Image (cartoon, rainbow, N blue to C red; front, side, top):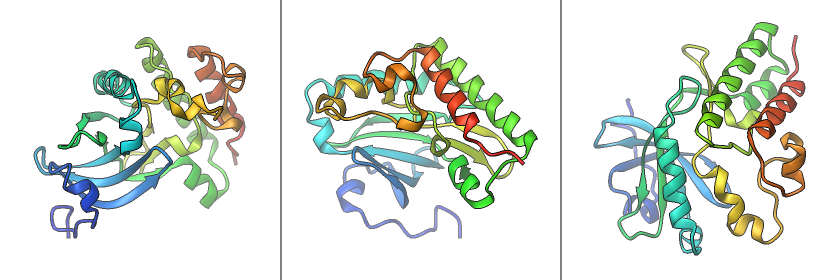
Amino acid sequence: MDETEAPALDRPDITGRLPRYRLLRQLAKTNMSEVFEAWDVVADRPVALKVVGPEFMAEPGFRRRFERETAIALSLAHPNIVAAYDAGFSTDGHLGYLAMQYVVGTTLARLLHRRGALTFEETVATGRGVGAALDAAHARDLVHRDVKPGNILLEDATGGVFLCDFGIARNLALTKLTATGGFLGTVNYAAPEQREGKPVGAAGGRVRAGLRALRMPVR
């Protein structure tokens, strides 16, 4: 059974508002969004569909930032960055969405949990891929803010390395997530200025990538 024949996920709260996408299964969930494996019935291809909830879409200024940052994601093309295909709002305007390349594989976090360590060659390839992705993003003034094993995808068929979860990450610090004193990102992989609540630039992204590499066991 292929994706076009697979049973759809029963989520009328989303599918009724996003008719272009057929939800197949939930991949991840955070306090801000859900990510689904979905089928794009217009482009006839699988996608990873991130859906942002209505409480964020109702936040003053969030919609403009969402549009700006998803536009950047859509224009950011690089072999080591998960491609963004489409972005916009639900038919009622209450949900935001970003449709991305669906990578058949696993995250670095899951691989390390399962195997315990990478080979030296795998570690070098992963580091190079992430570094190339960050360089391409920084050239477009896009800061990831949360480089960690859970945001690094490894493709099964090719061994390709992809950095994901760019989208609106750069400007979320201006929204309710940090307005109440919360921390955006993952503390163990954060640059010093990010932990202190200061603006994070390209150097901070390289610090996070370095911290990730130091925590990656090698065999």
